[in-house]
Amino acid sequence: MNVTTVFINALAGVCLVFALIKDPAKTKQALKMAVISFFRIFPTVLAIIIIIGLLSGFVPESQISKIVGENAGFRGVLTVALLGAVLHIPSLISFPLAASLLEKGASITSVAVFITTLTMIGMVTLPLEIRILGKKLALLRNGLSFVIAIIIGLIMGAIL
Amino acid sequence: MKKMSKEKQKKGLVKDMLFLGITLAVAVVLLLMFPEKKELVVSSSKGFFMEMILILPAVMILMGLFAVFVPNDVIVKYLGRSSGIKGIFLAILMGAFPTGPLYVAFPIAATLLKKGARISNIIAFLSAWACIKIPQELVELQFLGLKFMITRVVLTVVFVIVMGIAIEQIVLWSEKTNKHEQTS
Image 1 (tube, rainbow over the protein chains, first blue to last red):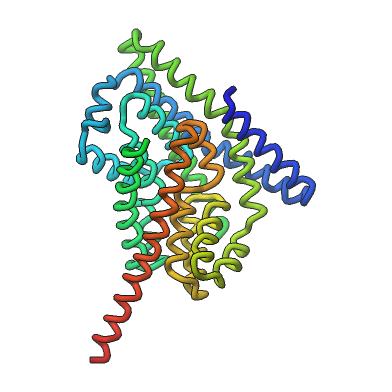
Image 2: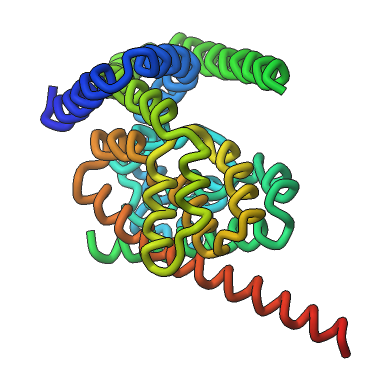
């Protein structure tokens, strides 16, 4: 158990107590939602964790750092940016995946770019976004998000 | 409408289970072929599993609490009438609180547009919803550390504001030129 784990659980505990005092009925509803979403996300969590294991067992570090490492250059950054934009995995699960890649020699830039495009850009949900918000807003948002994801990643790589 | 989303959820669960099944099958086959890798794969997976399982229930509880105590109409109420720098920060805050995937935020954004909220605020709201959710940030803290998390959040807030203003200007400009073309 590290400090972060304790902090997160304590935060959830404190919020839970406050919620219970304020409105027990609503809190019960929230807990029900929590249980449902826990079981809903669990299969994907397990799958990603297996993939992380396979990654560390079968993909040599030299390979990972060649594709997304410091020396992969701009092409490496572009690759992860596109990957993040196309993939549709819950961002919650992207963090352990990103951490394992970082451990195996990926650069901070590519990991930051990956997280940002993964969360901000949704190729799968783009048609829905166009229908609800209009073509102009949806395309501008997704397009500019791609650009700022790369800028954020480059700055993070430079200062961390 | 509710029935449909339930059916969709069921379909999503089946898809996720299928994904898990395929991953598991691939893992079993690979490990049978290369038994010498087993130790490394299992220990690595186990480490990440433990880290995840210790925080996942807490994160889910926080998400549930946000969803119930910060309903969507509260967001619309606050964002519909705010403006200026305060408005954009409020938009980011409002985007960071509630939970759910991004496509849940689209209808809220559409309502805000109809209510006449500024485009820059709506873009900031959507972007914050997408990538700086509070429960999510706790998972980022756990796996990537405080320095990484803070830096990414600060940079994201800055660039989301820039992007919001830029998109607003582009949309206003294109509307203006459209009007010009129509009148001339």
